[in-house]
Image 1 (cartoon, rainbow, N blue to C red):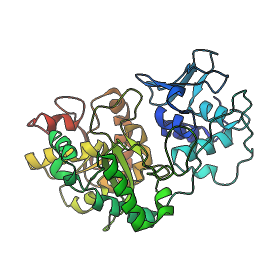
Image 2 (cartoon, helix red, strand yellow):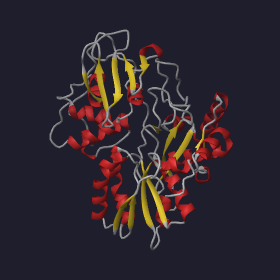
Image 3 (spheres, helix red, strand yellow):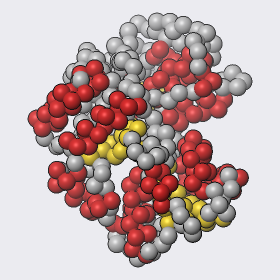
Image 4 (cartoon, rainbow, N blue to C red):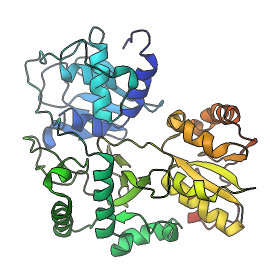
Length: 395
């Protein structure tokens, strides 16, 4: 799929932000009941939006580069996440490229400065024998203060200590003591409904529907109803906070505590609320005194695992986590502020993706004033949580 000059970087950002096959298919209305899709090892098989069919034959999956690839085994159509957005939205992938990016950014919950303003091309209806399933555009997301109020209420109603199986999961990973500020949704559907009702009582139904945690409308597809939880089985609730004294919750990540099923995302984000700052930055700003190193890892769980390893070995080290190695540049301003004048330990996962980005990140941080860059890897396994699970002895 081509891009006009000046939009290449934005196209790349949107493609990476739309990296979850399950979420993009759900947002585009392609999960039209249980017979409309089949789970696959790397994604989903859905009814092809390029041609009329009753049986799913179009693969939507995450490729080796971390972005969505699409290929229909029936008609041969292929493309990427933006191609899928274009065809379902009734847009021409080349002529209406700006509108495609706007729609992709909206679905991903990100804002691109170069796309501010109205689109030069208005969406047109899909020209296909089978009309698309109803789209759930939903109301505007909550503002930061309103979401922080709702988030505090959710964490109060659903503490980790209140769900023994979630607490056991965190203990098995060796980070339970660090995760007491996280949340845990009830596994019982009735209790989950009670939590929803309690949140509605506190913040109002409008705020709940705009929270990014609930279905905002009553779609005719599937069985979801307005106000029901999205991804109810993703019960571990991880708060990502803003820097500053208050450390207000800006967004949640959630994941199941069981093994994920085929095609199911391991992590789900809060719709319309992208991660803006590295995990733990509010703590690091207070911890980074003289002689304290800064460690950069991937994700919230590895942040807590590294903190546990640092505690065991009494290292003067503050730890922050980026949500995904390919998105480090989005967090460079905060990382640079934290790294200035000190030793930085880059502790990304021991995999190909981590290795690809280490040199770029190191160079960028040196340019921001870091005194020295060290690279460390887990001695066992892929990430630092593997070490805390095995009760290893070296950070």
